[in-house]
Image (cartoon, rainbow, N blue to C red; front, side):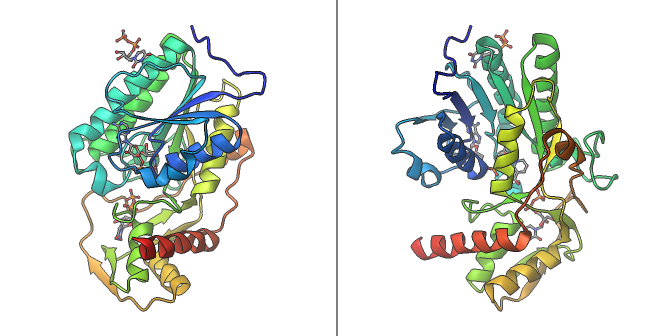
Length: 323
Ligand code: NAD
Ligand code: UDP
Ligand code: UDP
């Protein structure tokens, strides 16, 4: 029985796993700004102290170094489960640990949610759709995932985590919120994590060649991190019947080649384009159908790609100067 409840000021105790990562650090900041108490749990595999150092002086912010594949006993009102490496380079570095984080991590966080009666959010992913045969992807699409490829540790791990969330919900009445997050970018992305936006921006700023995998005709749709955090918080606050899965992302789709050109234009860089082999199982196209989020939450991303890229580029210019 959870005895720690919202106090009379409306302040909740909120656990954010993966809170020292890219999205997690923005979420911690937002929840603190909303007046809540935040417990950040992270094993610092891909996250860093730098992402959260500015929050440490806040007396309502607490950090625990912990790997969620091991049990965790704390008392909170809400849990946001974001712990998991998200970039292909990082999640393929130790694929067994990636599956463990998604599956054992989900079991532990769901066991925790069940014991204390907390509502729990799961950061699932558009990767559950694999290399999609339906475009754009609605939540009703079951996906086209290779179960034994290099991306499978992440894709299948996240799919199994979704199964666990819905079974804990049906079997144990746990209150769940499952979001399928599409490509997200913004300040505090890891400069070396291999994701396309950070790679291209760093390469453009340092006048290094822009590495385009394949011919650059594959598509993605990119969401600015502040828009994403807005909808995550809104989703958590929605009525209990809204469990998801819910696609969240920005439906503005473009090719990877066009993304490179846009970044070159904004940075004024003269980096050349360097074409490299396409990694295996790289999805050809991806774009969220966000009608469900629009209808249920009235949510719409508001940051244009140009605006979001400008802010991200400014961040990396400062970061690269200082490091
Ligand atoms: P990130 O790598 O910056 O953050 C992940 C955080 O989890 C890091 O701080 C890392 O140290 C921590 N972590 C990893 N394994 C852990 C473990 N076993 N125990 C405790 N902490 C652990 O990635 P991100 O982009 O911030 O992604 C956050 C979440 O959102 C992930 O679950 C990811 O799958 C999901 N997601 C992100 C995107 C995106 O475009 N960024 C898209 C879809 C889904
Ligand atoms: N667990 C946890 N914190 C808690 C309660 C449970 O980390 O506060 C973990 C524990 O490791 C357990 C898992 O969550 O194995 C699943 O819990 P559940 O109650 O569903 O199953 P069981 O305890 O029967 O294995
Ligand atoms: N990509 C690229 N150059 C890079 C990094 C990535 O062309 O330096 C491509 C990658 O092959 C993929 C797309 O950009 O088609 C998005 O890659 P990312 O790793 O950011 O995310 P995901 O594949 O998980 O959507």
